[in-house]
Picture 1 (cartoon, rainbow, N blue to C red):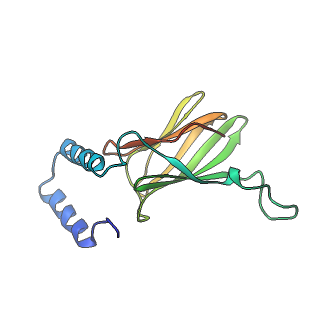
Picture 2: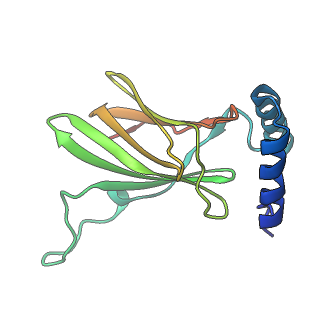
Picture 3: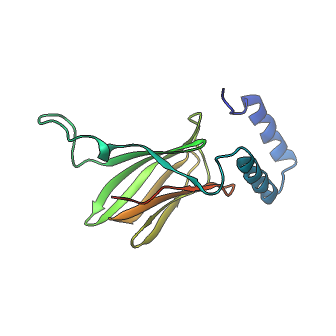
Length: 161
């Protein structure tokens, strides 16, 4: 059963926002309360790895698989999926590009995706389609942190790239 609002409710919500907008702080508080009430979406929820191309067995000789290609990870949290592609951009540096989707495959616009690494933290604001491009990630241990525009945050355990 989908929990996504009906298109008519989205249109009605847009009409209310145009005619009598609620304060942003009130909206953020309401979303945080709903996320905590629904369970599993507390601010300490974890982004767990669902798939990782680094876990695949070595490709057989003569196959078309590119061993030096990007590393693709799929990470999941309650109600969200993060598709992340790590690409080497120079000696000891990576970039991460991808998209954040909701449970029904809809983009999750707004928010920030950060990658914590040995040299600090790099981040990008999610675009209107939920896309991001994080540059300047140092090789070594990294952790991915997703912060929604409503205050919900979730992170992965540390892994190496």
